[in-house]
Structure formats: C-alpha cells, structure tokens
Amino acid sequence: MMGEFTVFIKKNVAFLILILLGVIFIAGLFYQRLDLTADKRYTLTDASKKVLEKIEEPMQIDIYLDGDFPADFKQLQSETISLLDEMRRLNSNISYQLIDPIKENISEDTLQAMGILPSNLQVEKGQITIFPYATVRYKKYGMTVPLIVEQAGISSDEQITKSIESLEYSFVNIMDKITHEHLKSVGILVNQKELNRLEMYSFASRILQSYNFGPVFPKDSQSLKIQDLPALRRFDAVVIAKPRKAFTDEEKMVIDQYIMHGGKTLWALSAVNAEMDTLLKSSKILAYPYDLNLTDLLFAYGVRINPVLIKDIQRPAPLNLQVGSVQGNAQNARVPWVYFPLGFPTEDTPNPITKNINPVRFEFPSPIDTLETEGVKKTILYQSSPFTDVQGTPSYVSLEEAKYADKADSLNIRAYRKGAKIMAALLEGKFTSAYDGRIESSTVQDFVRKSPPNKMIVIADGNVAKNEIIQGQPVPLGLDYSTQITYGNEEFLMNALNYLLDDSGLMSLRNRTVQMRMLDKQSILMDKSYWQWLNLLAPLVFIWAIGVGTIFWRKRKFGF
Image (tube, rainbow, N blue to C red):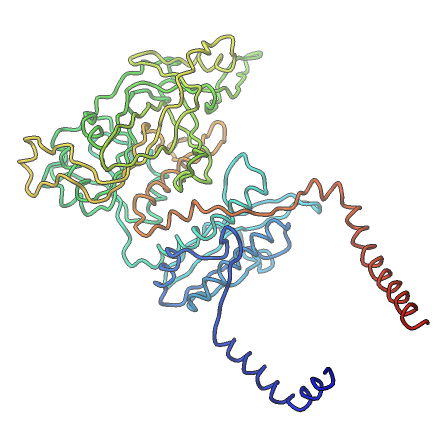
C-alpha cells in the first residue's frame, strides 16, 4: 500500500506542485485576520473604521519611540505598530515610520515646538531620555499624539497598560479632528461676571487646539435677549464658567431655547461665594450663597445645587501653609484642606470622561441633588467620599481648620458621616423646557418645548475651570503652584467637552479595557537562577532521554 502511494506521488509530482501553487495564489487574493484575544485588542471599532474612511489623501505618522529602552516601552512600541498596521491595512493612505530623536540629532527645541516633551527613565545603566509621542500630518496640518497616559499614583506596569488601552482613541481622535474641514464651535458666556481671560487662559488654550472658540457677546453688550438666540445657536456647545451675577428671566429663556434646539452646555457653577485668594490674605472669610437665579432652570432639567459647602475628611487636597516659625523663619507644611475634596472616578461604573486621568481638585464645591425627570438619564461623574460633612451658609471659613484637620482628636468625626455627595453629573436625554406651560413662552417665536436627544454636564464648582495666576502669568490648569501637584482638571474638562460634542461614539473608546499579561518582575528576580538552569539543562536531558530510549528500542527489536 505504501509503495503504491509512493509511485502515485512520483508520477503526479508536477500536477501536485501546480495545485499547491494554485492554492497559494488564491490564498494571496484573499485576506482574513482573526483576533482570538478575549478583549478584541487587535480589532478596530466601527467608529474608528468610519474615521479611517474619511482619510482621502496621504497621512504620515511619525512615531518618536525608537531606540534602546526598557521592555515595557518596547511593548508599547509593538502595540502602537500593530495598531497602525491594522489602520494601514484598512486605508492605504496611512503610512508611518519610527524615529529615534537622539540618533537623528533632533533638537529638544524642535521637539518642544511640536508639543513633544522628554521623559527621563532610570535604568540599570543609568538614566535615559525618551520621547513617547507621535505626530500626525495630513494635508497642511499637523497634530501631536501623546503615547503615555500621565496619571499619578499608579505603577509603571499600570501606566503602560492604561497607555495601551488609550492608543486607539488617541490616534483616532486626532485623525478625526485633522480630517474635519470645519471644526465645531464652542462659546463661553462673558456677561455674567464669569472667569476672566487670564483665569480661563489654560482651558481656553486647550479648547482652541480642537475647536473654534470665542465669547458670546450680547448685541446690547449688557444681557442676552431673544434676538441673540440665532447667534448663540451657531455654537455647538456653550461653557458657563463661574457666573457671579444673577441671570435675568430673559437670559434664562435664551439659554433654555438654545438647549431645546440641541445646544450642548457645560455648567461650572459655584453656589457659594468663598474665595481662596481672599482667605489666604485674611485667614478668615464669610461664605455666603450666590443668587444666580438658576434654580428653576436646572430643576427642570433634573438637578439642583444646594448652597452649602462640602467638607471631605477622607480625600482632601493638601494646602501649603505656614504652620509655625523657628527663629523668625517661616515653617511651611502640607496640610489637608477639607473644603477642597478630590474627585476620583467611580470604579463600579467607569465613564470615558473620567477614566485614566489624575484626581480632580474641587474648591469649595456644593452638593448636587438629582431629581426624577422623565426621559433624562443622570450619571455621576464625581462625588465626595462617604466621610463627608456639609457646612451651611452663611458661615465662616478659617485657615485655622487646616492646621488641625489631620488630628482626629480635634475634629468631630461623627459629623463626617453624611455620605458621598455628588459634585459633577452628566445628564442625557430629551429635556423639557423650563418654560413649557408658562406665559413667558408666548413671547418667543417658534417656541420649542422639548429638545432632541441632548447632553449637558453640571459641575457644582466654578473654580474647577480656573487656573492659578502667578506674577501676572497663568499657569497650566490643574497645577497647584505651591505644592507642585498636578490635578486632572484640564483633562476632565476637555473630556467633558469632547463627550458633549461627540456624535460618532469615539469617546466610548476611552472605556476600552485591555488585559495585559505582564510578567511578575519580583518572581523573575527571585527565581532567575532556577529558570536559567532549567532552560539550559532541560533540552540536554530531553535529548539524552531520546537517545537512550532509541538505543534501548533498537536492542529490543533488532538485538543490537
């Protein structure tokens, strides 16, 4: 039987070779890629594919992550290349290259001009500098993509994992913006004594990188009127950042109808007048409610901000204060300040707005109540810890509280048992006009009583968007100059705006979770010798066993 098969092979060898070549040729005409990973790590989402379809001209991507660096960053490099390979497969207009800025002698000034900043890593041989960024060039435009997620309080392994999770969103988000012929527009109200130009400088600069941005000026330069509504509707979203002047009924009507026509709103409202700058100068201030005349408007949409102060004893931000003096020299120390609670994302329900960013610092926030509103979904973005107290207003706030806030015997711990308080919330759905059924609606031509599917974000702290000003110059939003701690305020607000203006579902990519099978570095270190000897001796023992077995078998079968 075996002989007949051998004869058949010899007689038809040319025919079989032709069949094999034909199978190879046909297989080359078709491409099929299977992603067998549980989290579909190598499969692009439908939202990403729609963005790639819009790339009609060559797009060049330069990855500044080449050279000799630790294995963790090699893995990030490999995942980046894998992602771009898949994008290039779907759209041949995409091309990329790896660049080693050190080897290519690219000056740091040139890199910084592109928004590329160095990162210093400590390795066994000393310190090395890497530039974990990529640039995307399309037509005459260029944008920078950070490849590393900057988040405090996580290990290097966690940082690499979170960075890999964010890769698809980071690239696709930039591709989406750079291929848009017309950017969306974001406006900011300026006639209610909101944050001024310097106080909003950092946030405004970030907005301008992605959107058209400008102030909303009333025609009469005093207050919004119904005739201002067409101009307001030209903005896709409006930011209302810490107004300190009461809204008139007509101004509220204009904002209401803007929302009813589909306009997105980002509210950053301080319900209590309490300024840290004044407190640092006088050591004691009277905190009292702002009368913004917005209660009925927000109530109609499903939220209410209570004019009291949140005090969080478990997650307070630190202040750098003078706590004493030695021989006339001031002694400063970081002390917890319960009036500045830190916002952490909720672990039970991850949200793309708050995922993978530093804690957000709130300053004198107030609690938000969510109300039952038909057709409107509420999502908590940030809330205080369960160990929270609320302080009624008007009342005094003194810096002396900071000096004993970390001494349990000086505090009434039982007071901090009022449970978590909401500080920021997302509202989604079809909003009903606050003026529906009211006589004021008859004064508006083409009054709209119900909005299309819409979104708004309400933050019970206007200072969340305020950057510090040092010697007349604004510093980056989120940076506490005195402690040099960087909080996630800027990323939070930009994610909030991106979510509000996201019509294609790209923000959902930020919720993507990748399960990295990282090596246990401690086990590797402890068991290094064992695995080295095993890898050295096991193959030798295996070959010896086969040799001995073969000799024994031949003796049994053939007698020699």
